Length: 348
Image (cartoon, rainbow, N blue to C red; front, side, top):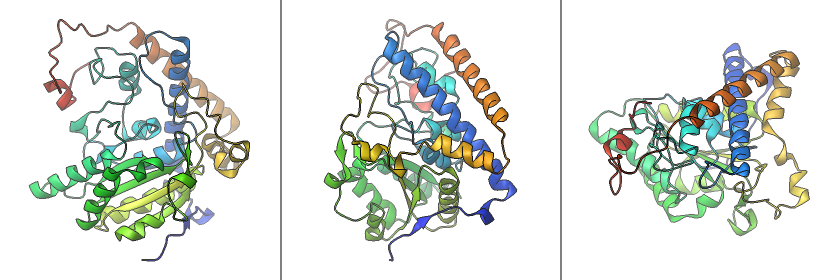
């Protein structure tokens, strides 16, 4: 199998349908950015957020471009640590996110586990596993189970991983199984060039991560993950191939995370040469410029949308701040889970 070539968006791709999806995805990106900025400020101020806060700043285009292609309740989505934009695009209400971070009993995990370990399995939204690389096996297993039960139909699965996570055994075992079984799964690799503080040069020896796709006999493409238009084109095509029986699809997005590994990390190990390179472009600004240049949104439209999103986030945080924390003497918690957590059906 030939090595993949980069995917780029050209003006002939800009149909009315593409325009609508671009603007919708941009709104998901903006909502994610504002929401995470708020969570970061709450973390730094101290108070109700227990545990870490991990921002997807700089990764929103790549994340949301995948989430927006999936169908909530029909497809399976296994998001990763920086996939708040993808979660929103998949249909997660931001109140689920805020309730989990603030440990409210009204949240999908009932205050049992904070931060990014949340999901609603019956809707196809899997809770993230901190052992990075493991979700690929979980999503592949979910698809295989549906195939065995005769309920797979045209549903697909998708999961995200970072460059560092592709070095884990779980990632390779899961990818090998998915390839052998030709499962309809999208493997989204955000190559943000650092696994915490470990650079690519200490992670893999191939020229590009997408070269690994050929080794497993699956389709693989690379994309400039700072460019929303190119990300949408790449994921649209990959999803179409997967639904049509084309087997696993690997998409590698090149970017630089614009924050530390978490809010506790100042990312001082990233040299200025990286911070000034093309991969360090802010995908939100790139998308805004793209839409403005084509007359899809004016500067006034962008300002109005920004103000609306900030009001939404502030109102949500204010509401959740008044909600109760769990009472350990009243909760029916078990060693691994309780029925409400398994089903993800707790009514707020």
